[in-house]
Image (cartoon, rainbow, N blue to C red; front, top):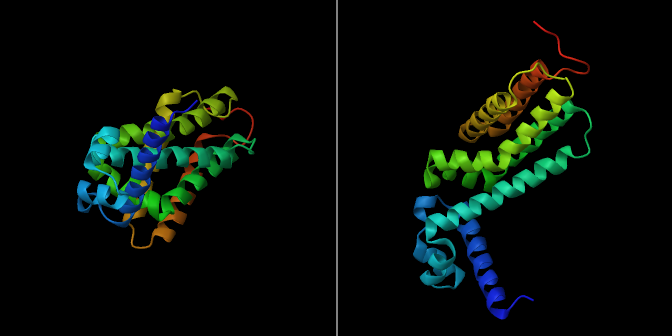
Length: 203
């Protein structure tokens, strides 16, 4: 059974995560102090450092929660789809919709590389979302719907393209227009790699 101490610790952790999500969404990472985080949460600095080792650790935990939710949403979007090419299209549409949301866009795409550093940001993003790309590529290869390129290489190529496009959308003067253009481009890329049925042609 969960003890009162364990329940209190989990409630404290949840309060810090919810507070971090709120403040990191409202403002840039650099403009949010550890003091403001604990004051808003009604907790002590000791609680922040005990659970997250400070503001950077709390930001990373908030970041990962958003990435896990994005992964679940994309997998839910593609679960009913049997055709591999259509599954890839649906995954891209779901991903771009997530990128268009203010919370994900601000915390993950805009502030994430600043707060975490580019290497850690890329590592965490690929940890959560890269698996979806690799799963689709593996399935297409197993079904003979793609020429036999190394799966990891193809997955990296598409993951890299999606990463750059997502960042481009956040920087665009017209994000909705950029999102539509990105979706059209990625659909063309997928159509050029994943055949519409039967083995792909050999050039």
